[in-house]
Length: 65
Image 1 (cartoon, helix red, strand yellow):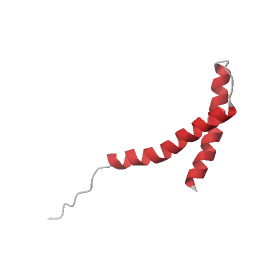
Image 2: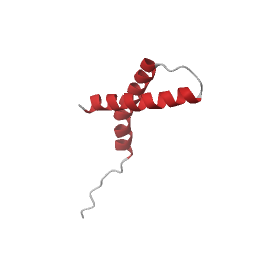
Image 3: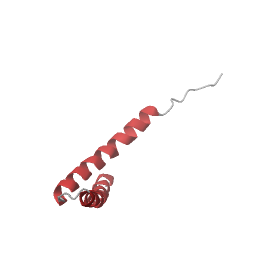
Image 4: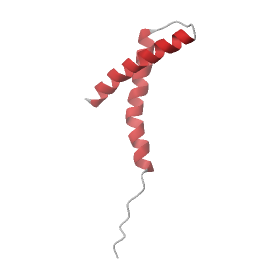
């Protein structure tokens, strides 16, 4: 379920960002292209960020003597 929600919110925020950037650069706006790129970036971030954060966490050591 979280993958679906990330895809939906990535598409929404990607469309907003894509529209603003295309207007600032006086370029053309591609609805499908922006949505696909935003969903891919969102899903990759969903998988990569916890993996990176988990490997950077300090290891717990037992200090019982």
